[in-house]
Length: 446
Image (tube, rainbow, N blue to C red; front, side, top):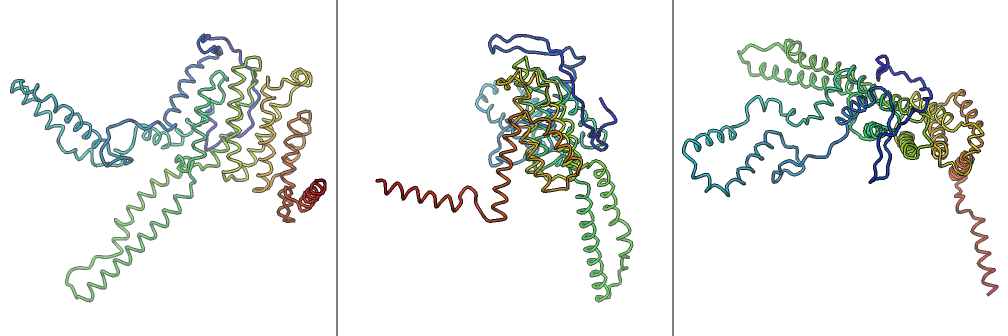
């Protein structure tokens, strides 16, 4: 655990390459024809259990199959009403065997009637005093707790960082953490710590100004009415109301909002932490000799790359986030694909047997597309451009680099021709003329 790192003071240094763990066979599944691997790492199972437990509160669960209330489909029904509906349903089901209960003695009947009246009572005032809490599920309550303090948010961030440091034999737990980040990034309703601090400040100022203005106008109207009617009743001092109870509520509200402000880190901080921490999956030396683990490692890397691509195309990022994205992609591409020439020649024609061979195309494509999109949105420093040149120049022995670069240049040429010269390179005028000439020659030949 790293207590110094967190969402509010993130360490965005590039992680180091990790050596391949020593995998051992745990068991063999004869039915599935699969071998389960593990490592001798200390407290590995305990770490996985904590990660799975924490993730369970953030992944959207399937809706529970509760009692159906007619006319309330799709509605949020408070728990006390759900309990009453369940009691009513069970009472309706028990009517069929009412004749069997008629043989019971009066004492049993009396005790049964007493318990039934208890269930039929109106909900107490304590259960109705906070109707909003009735709508909260257990998962929502836990989410609120984890979003209530900076230390809790940092704990959550650190546990998820630890998930990216697991050996690849625990890919199932890593996938769940990736899924949580994917939902946070893609869904419109963000957790509190992903919201921007200035959002609530603006709305608070507008609301308080409107409330004070409305109150002032109503007080002045009352004073004019009392003066015109000549009422003998004492006139309440409007200054007292404004300085007293009317200012008390906004003051308390602003205190709560200030606490929220301290928790809100903004989406950019979360994106930067995710980009950095998730790179640990790429920076684990692969077990190319174990096919099942190689498949898991490839799947995890492609899941992360898909989220990177979504961020590049769909998510608004500031300059710091763009730079972190490009820096991570450069280091990951270099670390995964820069292999000794002897090993590269050894796997020539069998590149799918290595993690580098499987990821070469997706990595080059993601890096080049991200670089183009970044330059369209922010200024990229000369140092980063030099890094790009150095990395790509050192990886020219990869056929995938030439392929992706060629496709990118072709696409850019088409875009420039369409925007500068209003030409569609896939439908040029000269091509049309040559097609017409070919048709004429064919007609003459017939």
